[in-house]
Amino acid sequence: MDDGVLYEIQWLGNSARVSAIDPKTGVEATIVAPANATEFDMKALARRKLVYLLNRRKKSPQGGGSAGDGRGGIVV
Image (cartoon, rainbow, N blue to C red; front, side):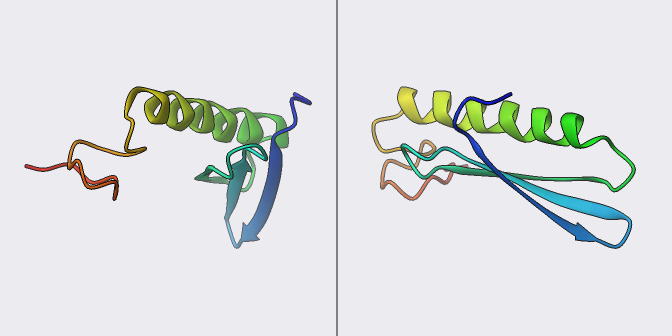
């Protein structure tokens, strides 16, 4: 899983906070996983979320949701 993505794991009691950061864009995806999950699984999940965010960003020129002001929210 060595594709240039940076990972950070913070252990918080019975859970772990895992961040995956794309060094080219600075986009960060964060997940919370049980502390007994494998490091490979935690990194894989964080990476999948990062890929989702990067793909979503490509589709939207503002880099966010449907609000149109670039802040990323969704107008309901």
